[in-house]
Length: 195
Image (cartoon, rainbow, N blue to C red; front, side, top):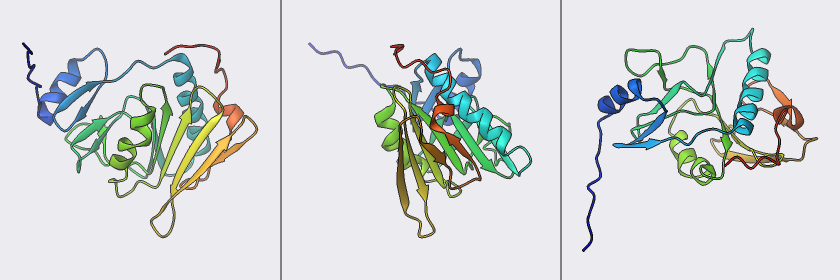
């Protein structure tokens, strides 16, 4: 005899109330609450390296840069998620009455892990493209010197550029910023099998 477990669906309001009290971050995907996997030290170093350097490079310009804890609302798909790094041109547009959830990133960075890389490169990218302001997506592999850059061109087409090897330099299209791949991976130990 098979026992069927009924899946529980939540409203966005129920999710937000639970998330305020949660010890760990969770994504919300159209009614489902999905626990986020824990980050590794390599993942954290890569996201931090990108964040600190882009923050310094853009500090005198009209951009807001956020790391990890700021939530993104994708209204078309009814999804709340936490990108690793977001860059917003000008002021953030908030969802709801608080200042914890934004809706208008220009640039999103995700550090890939074995458990999330297929989702981050596939469906999640589809979801992100529903954001009118979104122009650039950076995917950083945490297990080797490898970065994928998707940039939206003047015709509205997404163009892929790959950066492989520690001597490559990632040059962003949406903001005036570049970083050497070696800098991006500073303090990363590929020999650690953390996941």
